[in-house]
Length: 220
Image 1 (cartoon, helix red, strand yellow):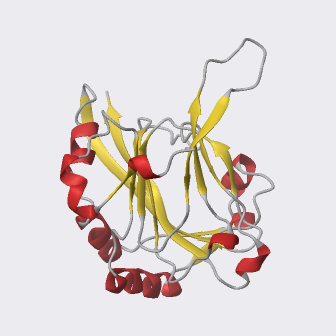
Image 2 (cartoon, one colour):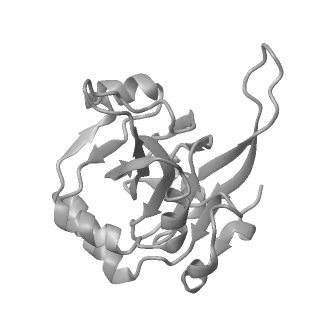
């Protein structure tokens, strides 16, 4: 598995391109003050557990009972203001016949026993009658917990799909293992198979706190 090759410093973001590399990891993207701001907002958010989310529970069985919360507009604006990056814009605008550009992000909290099963971000959305389907183009996950130790699990595993043989399961090879280090930012192009490893009981009461979601396009 490869970690270092796709990890860059915030100062080098201007030269990154998703056309050259589909996975980006930036350590220390968020300052301690920014992480504290979002943690405080998370403490005040209204959370729903996986057991209260029937569609998500159907998509991700046996995944513990992680929780999800909405991001208020003020927090969302502050979050997106830090993601005005040329690599995102260039990738989004590379798709033809765009009639709309959309984002969708939420807070997530993973405790001991929680995980996310392997998926590629293409079939977890629910269509709304009368609305065009949105195409997820770039997935984002970024971490805001104060502390995380190696033994606590919760790594993001990103796969490469190899040539499938007829009648056999999807052939996946892990190519990135990303620890949920506080302040780090991960982005990758969609579709791309990935999963979140189960948080270990040694994490105790510590929670894996993140913001995750997508940059999306709408087409006629």
